[in-house]
Image (tube, rainbow, N blue to C red; front, side, top):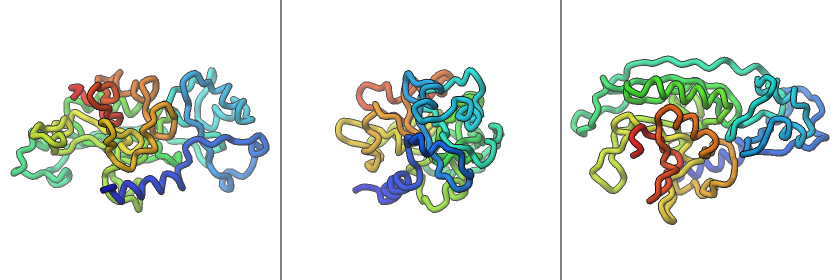
Length: 274
């Protein structure tokens, strides 16, 4: 049965988070920033800042300034470029690391989880959401992968890759209940349909924008509400591709489930390739 919470997420995405909208030349004239609807463009392979600016009737210097990108204006596949002036400058990326308490991760000593809370860390990182807003979000991972997790999310931020939501979800995306759409790490659970511990149970895996990057096994899509994003030759906000956002994690020691043969798990990154 489709998950109504994920169905709600699709509705929110279609109404509040436009993926890539062209700006007609007539709309490119200056206007008050607080009265204009934000318009975005997701970079596809082969595109350049100059080409994107020209196609939308904009000056490359303006697009660069709005996105805090300086000459020679490099762009990256899966990057989301703002095509209208921001109301304020994007703050700098920041990070911090904290220990976790058993209560904060729902630790149950009777569950037999393979990693103790003392071996896990909560990593706080800055990210940009689908509305282009700045947040501090957290992800729980094993202490041994803290540095590479920080480096990966720093790269995603620098590339202006958009993340739908990270914890605390109640603060970063109020009104959306449930965790099926959140970018996350540790979870004490087994691989679906088996007795094998998931790599998430060891804190060695990260799921990035699950709704936009579903697991696909034959005709089965997980989450079920993600059918819109199964076609991977499209470039929409939050989708990851081998030539784009995937590289931010793979260059930091994470293997990508989108390269698996028996199924494709586009959201999944792990240090063990499992």
